[in-house]
Length: 208
Image 1 (tube, helix red, strand yellow):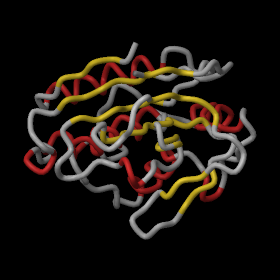
Image 2: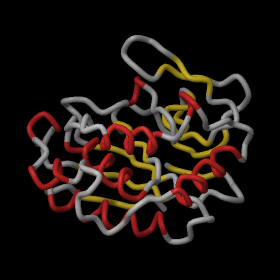
Image 3: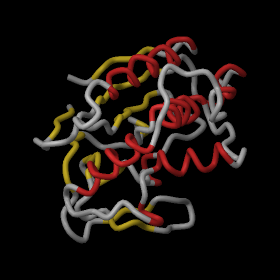
Image 4: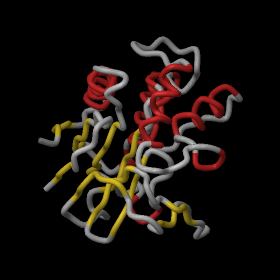
């Protein structure tokens, strides 16, 4: 079950992906890894207008998307520009490729680790979650997040460690954090994203 709270700017696309094998048995093909370069041919390209619109989306609830709290899509641009954006797994690499070129932050969680129901909405003041294996946490108060039964588990800045993909992942849930200030961009990104996943033999089902 998935629901989305009303929001004046959010134009999200959410979907489930079923991979044909566990991610450990599905290495990213060369054509996908090639898309992790900033100059790779892609149907979308990001610019300062996209960057500003995404920051405005995250800022709407009171969150400050700057410094270490900036959108994940901005980290990808920097990493790709420095030549250090490498392959992780097929699910994450497809996510990173689409996010890099579209300029939209994207969250991917393992559906076996997330506890239903799933919901997108603003995190309350003081909410936080651990985002890496070393136990570091991020304050997500005022930030749009994907919630499961245990609390916030993903957002446009840093996804929670407890629901991240791993070698055994076969089912994922993805949220493209689009904004109405960029009408249709999330839909175009989803269309391309779906093509990449299906090219690897995955099945994609959009959330109602």
